[in-house]
Length: 400
Image (tube, rainbow, N blue to C red; front, side, top):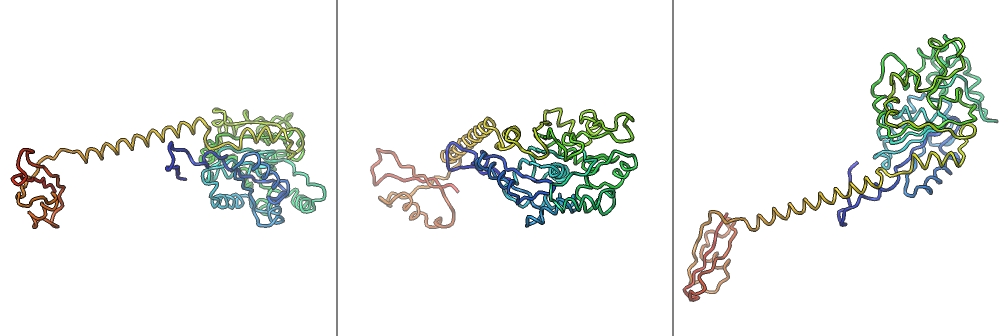
């Protein structure tokens, strides 16, 4: 995206769009919709909190029911591609944005960053995400018949071809309870296994794109019951059966001691080394965003301009100095052309009988054959001031 300056003002200033908060993109979670009242209210609150901010709510369907259904049924890989096309068409996002993922929307946005990241994400913030998957199906809200129907239908068949291409939660179901189940995860999972770079062939693009983030912020909930293990929000997981001890079945492996981190499969160790990882805990159950939780995260990691004030002042100073230098150089070139030495010039003399005609008219009358055939820069050189007027000769310098 080009840099458009307000050239009609002095000194130059960056346009307001560079001082406005960076746009924000939000991807909701399981059983939710971009059209839900609480998300629309959150969007309005953010717009009030950060005047001038643009907030985009990701939707996979044009209707609330269709968007909600897409959180249960669908191919996650296709959905991420759909979101990439959607974001690429939003003009306000082309210079970058901050991304917030709620619940499963967190790992889906991470998948977007790893596979595409165009437009580019500055800060990625995830609330209660399942970055290392789940080993237990999430509970359904009271009265949610669609959720209960889906979960009952596919429990025990999470790694079937149908589930791995149609059932959303199956595509981040990482069952480490039994060796046979974990082997099926490795062989048949088509989403989480890939974006975590767990296979023998690593995707360098995933690592490169994660390293481009300024901040990767992971938030878990203190009373989490929906996500099992709850530490999955911080990239912790139960150890896989091939490496765990018999007495450590229910122990989670912290991120910094995991192979994913030590071998830097997706760039988290690199990001951590430069202070790019942040871990927070919000009080409450899954997706209970209390005011302190919102204040902690939103005020810290989103709602800020593309550049901080000091950087913008330095950039504006550089622009003004550069423009001043260009103006000076331009004036010097113009002055040199106006007052350059005459060099080799041909002096021609007009008869004094031409009288009081203006120098240009005298030249054209005396030399009619030159008129219209060549272009001259003519400079009159008058005779000696003591010469009588009728005897005075008028000389011209003719130069092509």
